[in-house]
Amino acid sequence: MFNLDPNIRLIVLNNKKSEIHGHRGCRGYFPENTIEGFIHALRFDIEAIELDVVVSKDHQVLVSHEPYMHHKKCLWPNLQPITKKEEAVLLIYQMSYKEISAFDCGLLAHPDYPQLKTVKAYKPLLSEVIQTIELACYESKRKPIVYNIEIKSDALLIGKVQPDYEVYARLVLNVIASFPIESRVIIQSFDKQLLNTIFKMNNLIPLSLLIEDAQDPFIHIEELGFKPSILASHYIYLNAEQIAQLKAEKVKVFAFTVNEIKDIKKMLAWGVDAIITDYPDVAISCL
Image (cartoon, rainbow, N blue to C red):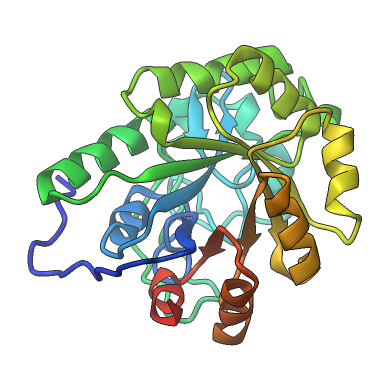
């Protein structure tokens, strides 16, 4: 159903030093975290697709950045607008996946993304995303993609918008284990306790600690309690010295969300291992 257009040529690059990861698919061009956006992202020669997961009331792992229906991104099943106040009662963890999938999350334009193509879309299951992407890569003879999966988690929200850590971790790991992709998966999170839970259950999957502040990244790693495979930071908090120090400690450095050419070039010059971007083609052009 979602075969890649054979007339669209993949951009082939040689000797790349930094990977390009499509942020929530390719958020600059298609609705974020949707099948349509992920399929479009595959048209570029990116190494990975970055996506976010949450859990429904019936313990389905689905792809969504927020644990609720965002009023700027989704519409009621009858396509009426969702108000900011209504978000509070539209918590994904309090809804069945059948209820969730009836909402539209692709028809709203976004003022921050003028090139965004609006299409009818819904919040898909993680299993559906993987199955669709794997089939699309196979049928188009595209190189296999890496899945950079962010688990949205917060200890203060357990029981309200997410299950406890062990249940949450097991649900996500079970979906991953149902496909032959474990060697092509990264799990990332801001929640250090969640990463610890994953690490105890499966220490083979590379784990990425997300940070978004000016605190020394080595303090974050010390708080984590083990050395992650990757430290992913908002690019504005990175500097060349820290990147060099982290890489000397065998910790890869990912920069997010890097969209401007001048910032992409700076991150490339500093030697980050991956750039997570809303505009994969722009980042590729900088390489």
